[in-house]
Length: 79
Image (cartoon, rainbow, N blue to C red; front, top):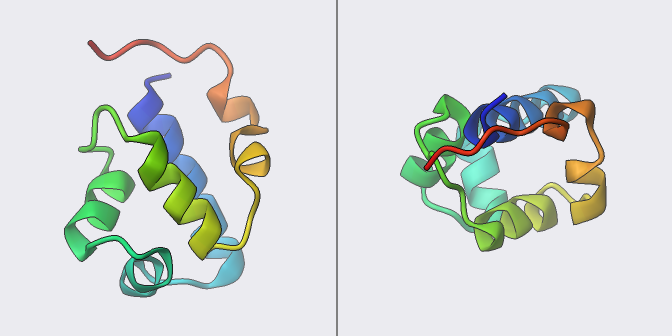
C-alpha cells in the first residue's frame, strides 16, 4: 500500500470513530482545509511528518498510536 493511501485510510478511520468532519479536522489540527482534504483524498503523495504530528495532536492521539496499525505494514515508496 502507498503511504498516502495508508495515511488517508487511518485519518478517515479516526474521524469516523470520533465523528469529526473534514472541516472540524482542519480546525482542530491547525491545518488548512485544502491540506486536510489532500490527506483524506490521498493527493498528498508524501505527507510531511509535521502535518501528521499536527493531525495527531488535533485528534488527541499519540503519534505511535497513529502508526501502530497494519495499514502501515509493507508501505510502498511513492518517489
